[in-house]
Length: 398
Ligand SMILES: [Cu+2]
Image (tube, rainbow, N blue to C red):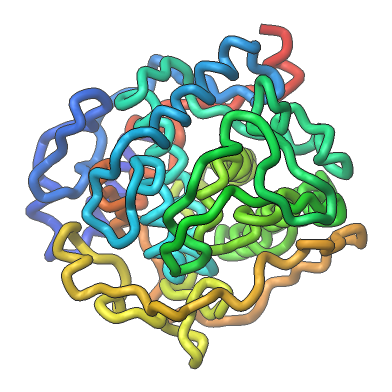
């Protein structure tokens, strides 16, 4: 797998990127340094010491505390990214998602980018806030239709609560007094972490919806079904509030539990066939105005970002500015008050993509960790990553 990953990576590199990738430096998980080119090289490393990603609901009280405390630590540290509106280190994690929203949603980048962002979150917790565990995920199957009762929202051991069908600032728990600075949408304002629980929306996470997406053999279809057909939208709409905002949703810390679960949904599909570990495709810019796609439905609205990803931060923000008055027009389908109680209906389109996303394309989270190629992000046990997902039933037996 490692060999195929490296080969696939080398074969798909564009000529302009060949030099930086020759840098022999390996993945740095401790010192915070990175290759000067900012591009992550292919990984010759073996995956032996495998990290376990455990469902939140199966963590011990102490493990939950350690995670929450590390999150609070990020929220208490100053931003290190010179990006508009970033105040805390936690903001730094919201920023790439906000700025790149139009490129990282509704495109072939969606799943690999969010996999990278989950890893980045875990990396910052561990390297900057002394967290010794790994990124937990939300065993969403336990909370469908009764999200208000979820362990996740426990005010003592979890993320604080919310109210069904009512938009409120988080009423209790560790994040009650946290002020966000990034969002809503592309704006940068000060606001609280809001939620509005919707049980109708949580139904999108049902196994029936996941199985519906698993019937497709190609990434192109499976990804779009996962993103648009229920699993992704389900708990975005189920939590509501900040989580319902497609641009600035990482402002609610439960975002990282939800998207790590979604990463597992992708992985469970990927591991069914070896060829899926290199199957990537899809549009490069979103057609969905929810994510800031332009009025013609094909291009992001902001300048400096017309043709895909910047090769290298920090040259990127130089010609970049947020449209000050931009507000996102709605939210994820399915919430608030949305209802996904019917059978899954997502169907593939016959869209022909002329310049699809490729393994050699580079993704960035603005130097929170080094830029890297998609090929590195495909296999969670390929060397660049080395983790596995433990199902809830097995995790509670620990
Ligand atoms: Cu997202």
